[in-house]
Every structure is written in C-alpha cells, then in structure tokens.
Length: 153
Image (tube, rainbow, N blue to C red; front, side, top):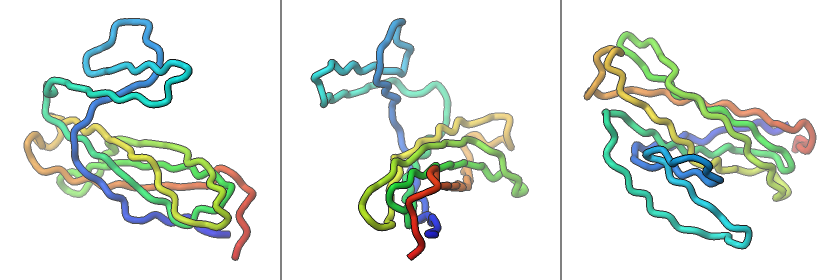
C-alpha cells in the first residue's frame, strides 16, 4: 500500500477578508460580505474593502501538497498550529480539517489542498508577547477516508 507523504508546508503572513456564499436573512455584520449566485450565473467578481482591525494580530495562510495519493481514494487532512512559548512549551492556537476529493488519474501522485487560513490574535496575557516575534509549529495529519482502491506496486 502506498503511504501518504507531505511536501514541506508553505506559509505566508498576509491580510484578507472573509467572503461567504449563501443566503442572508439578517443584517450583515461588519467585515462580512454576502455573495448571491442566481441559478444561471457561474462567475462573479467581488471587491471587499474593510477598515483596519481594532487590535494587533497575525494571519497565517498555509498551502500544502499531499504526496503519493492513490486514485479513487479521498484523503482526510488535519493541520494544527502551535505557538512555541518562552521555555519551549507549546500552546495550540488552531486546528483545520478538510477532505480532499478522490482523483481518477490512474496512478498515485501529489494532490494540492486548498489554502488554509489561521487567524492568530495577539494575546496580552501570554508571555507579554504584544509586538514581539512569534514562533509557530505546524503539524499535518492525513488518513485515507476510503479503504479500497490502492494496490501496492
């Protein structure tokens, strides 16, 4: 059986805005934009402008590639972000989970996961870190969701 392997995780700090696609039945909260697609519309463009955030913080955008994914099998992915504190202790700051759909290309190959974002607010009560460098460790987890479909080569 082929084993799943990860390429190194690429991460970049950046800014962005949340966009949700769906129906809205109440007033839109600040920082949220609703986009509506009519039945025959397949493409829309949107520009989102927002004011500066009220506090300091970081956004961590992560891309990852899972190596050696067998055809016909979905893959569950977990990604955790841990902050390394003074003294080396780690604090969990976030966890993201997703399912990669099965590919049908005939042989095992690399599959890119969609980008994942972590919002990392500054916490004044943690090691007095406001305005100081921060150190994070990302850990990836993967498991096939489907039991059949991959023969050893």
